[in-house]
Image (cartoon, rainbow over all chains, first blue to last red; front, side, top):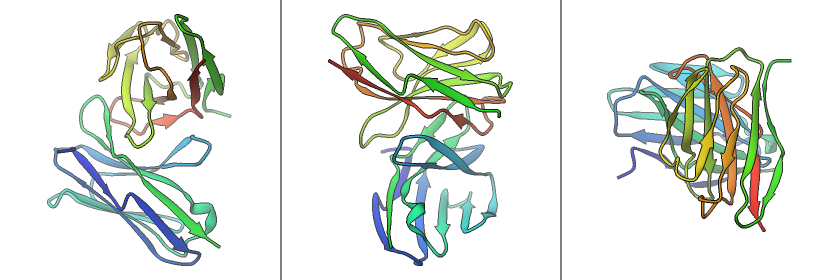
Length: 107
Length: 112
């Protein structure tokens, strides 16, 4: 069983829709990270969470430590949000990465 | 501008050839990392370094080598012992091993 699982693997949405991407994990962590990978390949760190909720612009990330679950929400989605969103765990010397959710937002 | 750079963007390797991927950061970060990304898989750690002149193997170090002679530089050599080197390689850095990692733009390695 993978230590971190993301769902869905692929997601297509219409512009303006509210989007939720989920991440479940099975190990102890010090923090959970949400990353965004654009088609060119570069990765940007969106959030680092150890508890509760964080918001940045149209992006909201939540984590429930007891349930070992995190969600990334995108409000009023836009075609420029099209990317792969990756959940990563940190707890030792390294990150443990999910396989990513590929999001496509249609105009 | 502070950041992390990788070069080249694309690299071609012939059979039996060693190639070196460059990674430079001017963020004054102590920790640096090399990852490999294959389609449909999560990023996998090749090597990491917590401090200058020290580095550790990650999960898939076989066929790769690194050096950390300067704080800002962490080059990765893909040796001929790596039998399946075609992949996207990402370098990252952070202030410490549990802190947010900042990623470079990546190098795509292809075997001719």
